[in-house]
Image 1: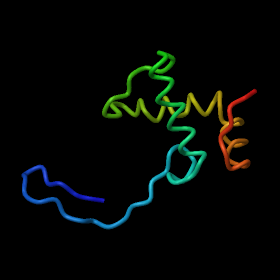
Image 2: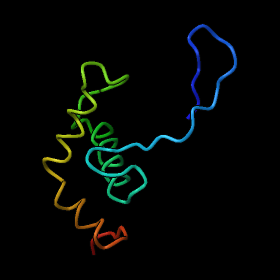
Image 3: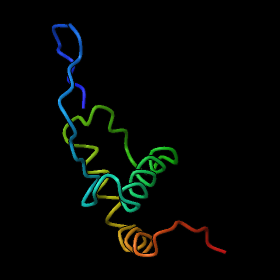
Amino acid sequence: MLLVSKEGGSPRNAGARLINIGPYPGDSLNAQTLALLHEFGHVINLLPLDFDNVDGKSVQNTAEVLRYCRAEIDAKGRRGTLQAAK
């Protein structure tokens, strides 16, 4: 992670930082699937804009995706691959 001062100057290395996407570790297939579904929700106008996460809107949108898609996300993660339905 790089820290950039608001006052300017060179960015400094602050080391690694683990992130989560919803309830999933950021480097997992489940997290990647959730992130893609969240962003796709914006593209097809099912989710309101959440730019800059004002008022926690991004977290609310992620919760909404989980409400409808969690079972499928978890199932895909257990299989370890993403496959298109035939």
